[in-house]
Amino acid sequence: MADDPLLAWRPRFPSLEKCVHLISHSLGCVPAKAEEDLAEYFDLWSTRSITAWDEWIPEVSRAAARIEKIISAPAGTVAMHQNVSTVMSVLASCLDYRERPRVVYESLMFPTVSYVWKAEERRGAEVVLVPSSDGKTVDADAVCAAIDERTIAVPIQHVVFGTGFIQDVKKIAARAKAVGAHVILDCYQSVGTIPLDVVDLGVSFACGGSVKYLCGGPGAGWLYVRPDLIGQFEPRVTGWFGNAHPFAFTMPEQTYAEGVMRYLGGTPAIAALYQSRAGHAIIAEVGVSRIRDKSLAMTARAIALVDEHGFTLNSPREESRRGGSVVFDFVGAADVCRELNRRRFFCDHRPGVGIRIAPHFYTKAEELDLFFAEVQRIRG
Image 1: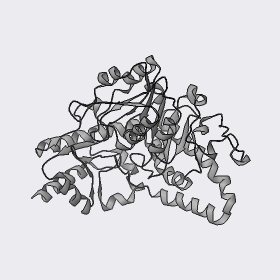
Image 2: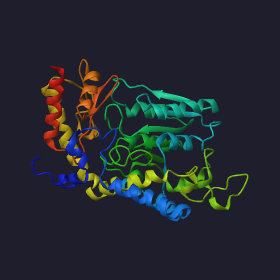
Image 3: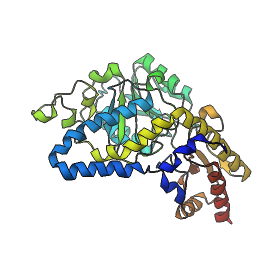
Image 4: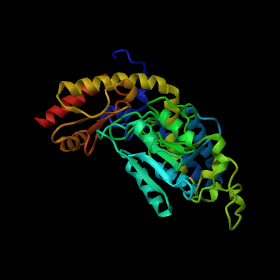
């Protein structure tokens, strides 16, 4: 990959010159412009005081529009939130379990999502965890078999966080739709590195955030709602920004906004929206399809290095099932990971699967070689 056109964007991330950053599946590198955008937020606060809200409130819709572009969602279908935990709580609060109590998801689910849905058992939900036969992948047929006419929600990951396995979302969504259930798709491990079309996938809801491949840092989560469902639900987890007229301060009952804003809660985390703006804009500028092409090439190179060093690969080899990360293991991997991070070779470790790395569009091919050489140096 000597001639890599995507490296033209690398200078926008100057901190990359001081480290080997292979952790975009967990925390994307910070764009230099984020500092400028946060300074704009600070300046508005400093110079305009309460009238800064005249600019801050429109930024909520502008941030949502940037996400809509990246996930190929229709205009007016995305609402901004702080994180996926909040989004899941809002959606769970929409549901009535008396006639359809089942909530189905895979046993490899990211824990925060499971915590939310297991807590719904207090309200009458029946949580069904579909086991993984190998601890790495999810059998879509097994998930579909667990979905029946008593199922109301199917919260699943697009890409399994621990292993980078891409699920067959369309198959699961089709099964859910056939019985009147709703797929809630967690896109956190795919948005920004795998092309997304939430309409084509056929899901009822989708969510994610900006911490990882979108290079936007924490606090700028988002929720997509299928257009025909927007007016159907009234979240119990709500707030004044979900009101039809927030600044009318009506009491005591909630009067929901007609559009997707009805899924908002309290005062938005405005600073996070400014912070995430540069990352969103750069991802849209580069183009996720081009990012995906490079990701596949770089992860293939990483897998070859895993094989060369005799490590155990715990992420998919098959391109159609491989997300943006490569996961590998060996005895003592957790200790090696800690030392790698101390030396600024940034990665992470997950119990049971090992070290996770994720080259992104700004990664140089030779950085993978440097990383694996450093692993060997640490291991002695």
